[in-house]
Amino acid sequence: MNQIAASDIKIILGDFNAKVGKESIYKPTIGNESLHNGTNNNRRKMIQFVISKFLNVRGTTFPQKDIHKATWYSADGRTANQIHHILISNRFRSAITDIRALRGPDIGSDHNFMKINFKVKLRAKTGNKYNKKRKMVNIFQNPKWKQEYAIEINNKFEIPENLDDEDSSDNGINEKWENITTRIKETKQQLIEKDEGTETFKNKWYDEECKFAIEEMKTARQK
Picture 1 (cartoon, rainbow, N blue to C red):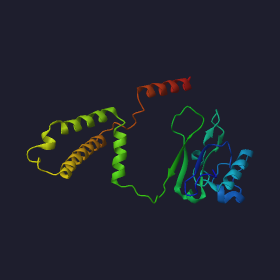
Picture 2: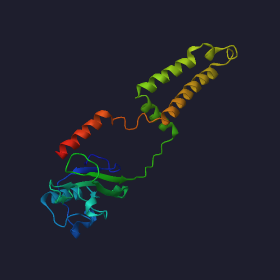
Picture 3: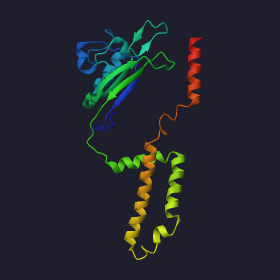
Picture 4: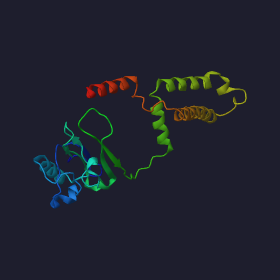
């Protein structure tokens, strides 16, 4: 932690097995919206760590219903604890605008998902040039688009007349080079537009095997 630059956003999140209370002495660090009134030993250790590293506990600072604070339920469903916590640098604590536990997703565990709304303003601005480069990297991870790009490029330069026909034989080398780069850029743009109009990369990990595994898990839990 001490080796990380102060300008970087430090976020630590996970199951600390720590019940945070509502003591006023720790209010600037933990807020006043914890699910618990009491404390435990792990909680004291976590608070000491948070204070020593100039962090802030965000999960206990937002007013939510108790059902949206509990991150763990006992097997009988009667006991609920808030033991998952999100720690962030004091400097960037306002970047987290909301935190709540989600009871709906079936993950085959007695723990709940945590939903975090995170919003931060960065000074560096990325232009279209960077975005296009990133899109091309993502596109070339798909063998289909990779092959189509190679075919399109090959078709554009396969016929000699495309590069050196009678009308352009007297053109200078700079004009010819400009012609080549223009064709390459046009091919890239066409591929990006095709990719944006499809859902090739959306949820590609969720296939029939995943569906079958989830159904088996639900059947096992019912038994």
